[in-house]
Image (cartoon, rainbow, N blue to C red; front, side, top):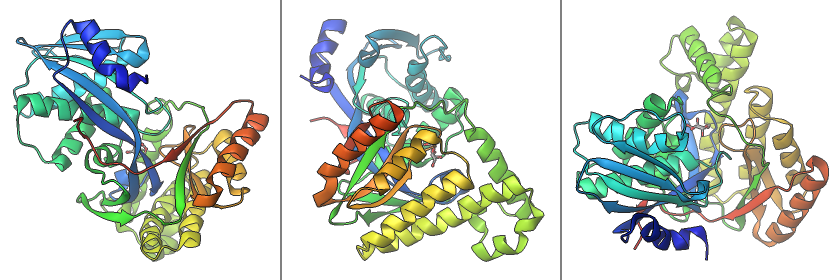
Length: 381
Ligand code: GLA
């Protein structure tokens, strides 16, 4: 029995009474549009068939008790009256942060017993933390019974991540985990959060390959990249790089410090690639879609400088396989996963060959996930 299936039994064993409900929220893979979300730009993620789950039971007091089943049953507990960060049990900050953000909006929450489990690989760029936040918010919403749109719920989870956990991430991960639609990607305009379903290329499969190199997002260059983008936007006199066209950039590129110019070029070209990719998906132009993914990786590697040797190796190996239409790093970078578009009939050989060749080169066995696009967060029936 998998961890997820045994969640109800484990909950009952730990808390001495059955869970009343189970909630789920999926991880995600971003097809294209990397680091554009915090530049008010466009992204094209889909939720994957890997998720975080929370089994829950209401309490009569204001305490929240947490057990992380995937971390060897680690426990944490807090009162809703004083919610502080917990350095020793950092995983609990995603739940604490969501409760904190909800109460900051004046919402009254009941105490809960919660057991957490999931099959989104942790710290691999598939948004396990956003999935946990969205799952927690969905759980609190159910038991507290307040009305909140899914878009606001996603915003609230981003606020928990930004202001409580301390990672200045954009909105993409929480948004897709909350609002995803099965069988589709979502084109999200991160300026006004308008979104629309986008078809997935037909005849091809989304395959995610994990370098098994864990990223340290908060410690990494993520926040520096943000600052460089803001500097570029100021130089152009606009609110965000979203407002700079390719022509305007070419005209004034020289006025920017070289590094800042490269960062800006990635964002501006990447925004254009997202819109082109949606057009390609609508016409089911697999080759065009794949080429845009490839160009995105080159731009992330050379201009945005967020790739690493393992990611580049995995991308190169993938592209050499028959039936691979495109390959790029996905998520923040610095390790984590690649996303690949592979012709349906080549998925099996692709998976076997990439696993073997990466292992031979890097001396680590990669994990490979053949992904299906799922719905956003929900209660488990
Ligand atoms: C992380 C962040 C997102 C986004 C991506 C890069 O996943 O949480 O908001 O910025 O990196 O596209």
